[in-house]
Length: 182
Image (cartoon, rainbow, N blue to C red):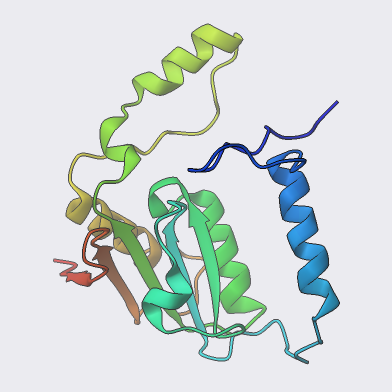
């Protein structure tokens, strides 16, 4: 029994004896660990910032924001939407680990723009159980960033809600565009 899908064929054919994608990741980790040395860091982010962003594979947040290992907490989910679980993570980040700033990053061409809550209904029909979570689909990325900023700013669990800023990352140019919360 394998625990993940086979490695997809590359542009020049299949990858011989590569096994599954997970096998490839585990092998990459073994190589990483062989050269690894403990950086001696604390779990507290050096820059005291938490970044909430979409899970989209096109977003290389550390490169796009000029971040180094240990600079920030990164919280990712579908759409970068501020859900109850994001509030949970931000609360722990602030109250236990000292972050003070929150940066929210959505992006152009997000998959959530093409979904609706009908997705939940379809899942219920397929598996016989309605998901407890909302899809949080949206049509207007700017408005969704504003909604996410509002959810952070009004959460009673968060200590620091004065430095909350939201952005849209353009997947074609790599540029951030700041969203006015008003």
